[in-house]
Figure 1 (tube, rainbow over the protein chains, first blue to last red):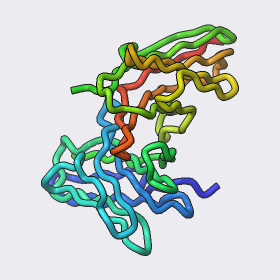
Figure 2 (cartoon, rainbow over the protein chains, first blue to last red):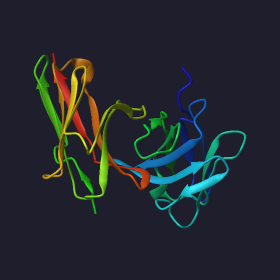
Figure 3 (cartoon, chains in turn yellow, green):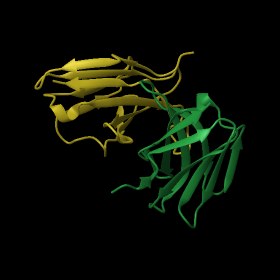
Length: 115
Length: 112
């Protein structure tokens, strides 16, 4: 069952360090989405990528956050100079075609804790 | 600005009875709606969806109802089972945007 894989599952960083979160989509899926869930809240959209392209980054903070989905390898969400407010669960989802009605399948998430 | 709202943070139901989870939205551009179920320390799992051209969609024990004029949808689970205990998220999308907008979730507890 090759679902969406995310690693690491848990990540602890000190303030000012960098966090790298990885996402391998369902085999054959070329559309990837990143969401963030703060405690007691729903998931908030961050960015939508296709292979080698950022399609929509309207939910991404303007500074310190970046995402990529290279031709080969997993999608990476990178957070530079982390702050305590970045502590959250980060979920990746993938879909086959990328249409609005195309089901997004989620990974188990990476729980980032910033000390 | 919450475009998708789940006003009940929790719901308890007896096993075998019906569970009804509610969701309201404000953005009239939304035309596709989904329900996801989430267990602790796991990612959301897709349950059922409905397009705005329909008012009902059924899949086994799960039925989603959409009332476009009221901008309201609901998920019915019949009969409820203890394994259904989880957080249920309502989500919405519009034809022009792939991103999903989620509600804050409802914790369903099915009591044996």
